[in-house]
Length: 113
Image (cartoon, rainbow, N blue to C red; front, side):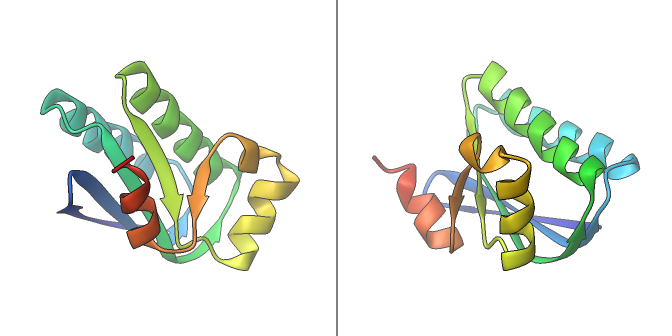
């Protein structure tokens, strides 16, 4: 998995690419979120548009990320979920926990309210 970050209108966009399988990537992802919390950047959008596959450990990584942000008085929203990932979120009932958006722009805009 590759991680790329950018910022847009007060939100940090973390783009994940490839297969989200947890493991060592979980540590990198969590450290990145803590870095943003330490600099008072609390609005995170995780762009999943380029994710090909996600397993349960990858879902666990996202849940851990959401928990980290909530504990730090922030939020983490998902954008660009493919049909496959969206159905995974529905089956696991995680769709009720995550705010999901079709595009990064919609997710960023949701922080403006």
